[in-house]
Each structure stands twice: as C-alpha cells, then as structure tokens.
Image (cartoon, rainbow, N blue to C red; front, side):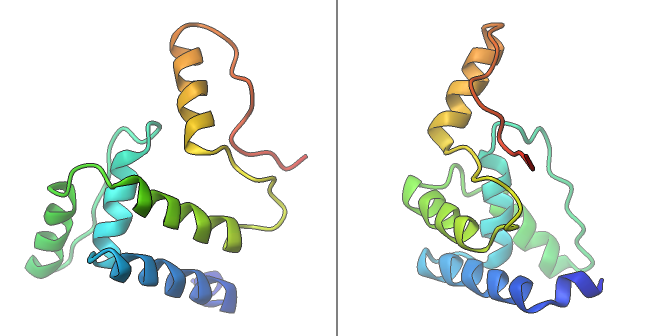
Amino acid sequence: MERYRTSPTKRAVGKYLGVAEKHGLTLTELALAWCRTQWFVTSSIIGATSMEQLREDIAAFALGDLPDEVLDDVDEVYREVREPTLKPPQTRVEARRAAEEAAAGKEPRAKAYSRN
C-alpha cells in the first residue's frame, strides 16, 4: 500500500479530484464513469463497504457517457502524471481507430503502451 501514498500519487489524486469537482462529479463517479467509457473495459467491479458507497457507485453508472470535455481533462491529468517510463498512450481517436481496425481483422497501427 505504500506505493499509493507517494507524493506523485497524491498529486495525481488531487488533480483528478479537481477534474471531478470542475464537472460536478465525485471522484468515485468520475472514476467509474470513465471506466464505463473505455472500449476495452467490459465490466467494472465495485467494492462498496457501506450503503452510501453503494449508492454513489450505482449513481456513477446512471451518468451515461462522460462528455468529451471531461474526458479531455482526464487525459490532460494522465499525460501530466503518468508513469514517466511509458511512451504517451493513444488518444481516444487513435484507440477507436485501432478498435475498429481490430474488429475488421486488420493489424492495429499503434499499441496503447510501450516500455521500449
């Protein structure tokens, strides 16, 4: 658990909290709604330990798709605080294109992540 208590992690959580607040969401709603919008996520496992947490988790799924402005703000935070040894990930447009190409049986143009 110690790795989650580092300064960069705390900074990232603070920035994501700022995005959530800017758009009138809780951090939980932002996180679960973001997961729901990702083409590669087929299900979300929630771990509520109270009725209040369960209500918040369920509310996140009722939000529908996050607007592009919210997703852009999340992407901006990710680019700023992501693991520095990774190359930049695909943009949403590149990811959609890769998914469409994969569905059509074509080789994707780029990988989402690379350590090389």
